[in-house]
Image (tube, rainbow, N blue to C red; front, side, top):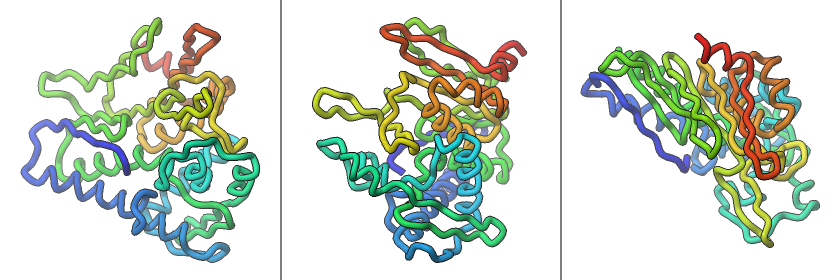
Amino acid sequence: MGTSWSVRLVDPAPEAMTTIETALDRVVGQMSHWSAGSDLCRFNQAAADVWHPLPSELSDVLAAALRVARASDGAFDPAMGRLVDLWGFGPPGPRGTAPSLAEIRAVQGGRIEHDSARCRARRTDPAALDFSGIAKGHAVDAVAGSLRDTGHRDFLIEIGGELLGEGVKPDGQPWWVDLAPLPGIAPVRIALHGLSVATSGADQRNFVVGGRRYSHTLDPRTGGPIANGVVQLSVIHPNCMLADAWATALTVLGPDASAVAERETLAMHRVWRDGGVLREAMSSALEAMLSD
């Protein structure tokens, strides 16, 4: 899916590598928008306004993505694949100019209908699934589940910057993770003991056109990159898939993120640029976690 992975595993069984790669291959085969043969790409290429069966895992991730989309009032949208491509962040590759308003409007407005009971979905044009804001987190959960099923209890998984820690290190310490340090911001250290952390931010990927820098994080509601000053936002959650999706949604929400994080009881750390100064905020759930 265009990223890297690593696993730190205590006392690995001989089949551990096969276990990990099998779990990752299953996720890629179902949810990669970079692989034309994936179930997700086949769904996007199939006829619109027709119900199509989905593998159960893909159906589950779609259900979670749509729940976050509703709870965030559209700040997260798994159906904006063509918008991602239009801005040069999808498989077609980068572009040298920013798209016009007419081009943006042409790829907005589609929707995904999901029948979770029957593991099927249908789309209206121009909707196209893109799980780049949730699939990495799901892949972390999938690898963790496969390791648990094969008897492993102590590990740290990282896929594209999303992490999950379980058990302890050989020295008995938990898997300590520092949120990416920023100038003037004190490091925030988290013990990933049955927890995940996902981080999103406007500075991670971008491109420059005509002297203007555009973030890779798109706001589905406007059709353009965010410009709300968010530099980095992390969500800590037992489920890495939800941490991943909510980190993206809250980054898009910007100044409204704190209110939504409180409503959803999310452990969130947000850093934003206020003029030339970096400022930070924590949700009450994260403050309580750090005080334990």
